[in-house]
Length: 119
Image (cartoon, rainbow, N blue to C red; front, side, top):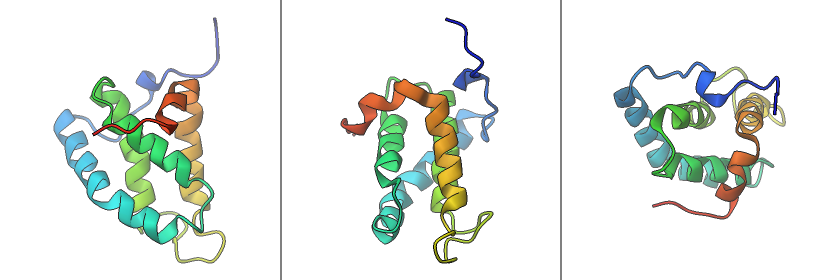
């Protein structure tokens, strides 16, 4: 099947080494639940964040594929971004845009991660 969608492996990762990726993954592990607890009722994409987190935790997914997901989750976690999260109603639009872009690239590959949890 021929598609115009680039393969996730072809995307440029914000991390050039597994060591950089692991450091960012640690940040996500430490901060994601605090951020979701604060924002979960205000955002409609909390379930997608959880699925991406589960994908990141899957030991069978290579680190360079996870690096794209980790980059998006770090963007979601950090308060400094294109539109500050404190802005009423629109503060999470940029976060949503980043998450949606990653969801589109993962496509159906992400479906099993909505229900599974990886330790």
